[in-house]
Image 1: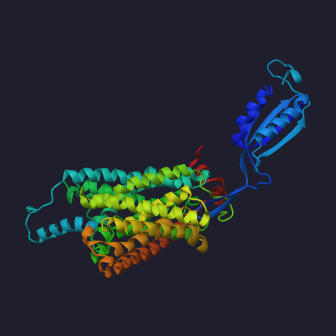
Image 2: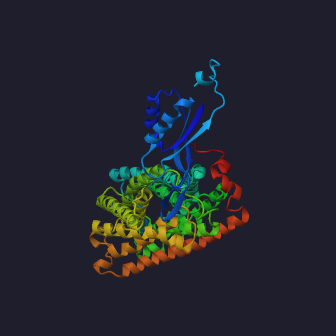
Image 3: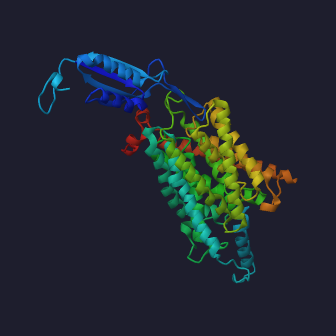
Length: 112
Length: 430
């Protein structure tokens, strides 16, 4: 099993959720986060006072999938989240050792 | 002008009557006018609305999230404090005959203000509360200069003393029969009394308290400009009571004051917006609302004396000059006037007071300005500005130093870092 963590532009969330649902992914976890990459934030100016805002709002999507789905999921997220402009985000993949469905006690592939 | 004509006349009549030892039964004794009274009741409510919630929201939206409640609380608490002080002694020091420097104690605790007492054509009770709302907003404006760092307790003591020792005398000089009004200085609705007064006091307070921790380095961006936009809009609407109400009558002067107020405000808002757009590439919300307030401030002294064309010119000049004061002058001189109480109210007030002398029109307010050949009026206006500025600066400095030595003006650095809301008031906004 793999944990796929995607940091994306907030307005892309709904599109990605729909695309993953179409792939048969049944659950995901979303959080509102702030951060920066090469994009390095933006400048705001109030009555002449300039502030560089380093941390921009992003959405973090976490989804756990079976190993054989990794390529299609990665490809789907990358394609859907891309606008071609700086600040589109990143995707990270990690191995998952175990999964348990709390209600039934099912484990691993039965639990995701 | 407004009070010399409105209050000076009844007092004069009373003095003459007393000298002649006849009861005040003159045929032309002032009579209550229901139309005037209705408009002044309305105006009074409008001006109170400027401070709460108008100014509380305007300032509250501009500070950081950790200081919103403390900032809004200052406006609300000042409203309550000044109401009581005005009732006890402030009104008497401003509007009792007294001397040309300060009013007497004849109206101490509103003595003599019965149900039937009149000021001009309206009940004295209405006049007293109308003027009270001006006495409330003036010190509340100062709080913008020391936002984010002053102790609430010290703020209450300072503002209370300031109201009695600075506001009431200056109000008396201009409107209560004092020497500035008698000299012919024009201030229809409070350019000197309210705006130069509070703006200069704010600058002195910003200098005495010092900069906020992290000023110029940390992000001090406004936390919610929608609150500020709502507050500025309430100020704009309430200002019709402030300016048109200063006619103290429901008549053509009030109508013209309303018209020029609207025109100058729009001109200043657009001027500030375009200044930003040209220099920074974007027209900002904070910019257009700041410009509107600058226009409201600048037209205040002129609102009973200028025609619509003059109002538009005053608005545009005020928008440009106040933008320059807030965005360029402040960084250049390095003082930390948190919310630009001086940049907008002090500078806007000075611009408005002087331009009143330029654009005053005899057909509107009975006095000619520079453009109608009366250059001396500009000199008179400068005199009014200078006297107010010097007295306010010195008196404010002394009061702040006294409070600083006895109880301390500034919160400790830890409180300032964590936020005033939690540390001073035990609450957080959300």
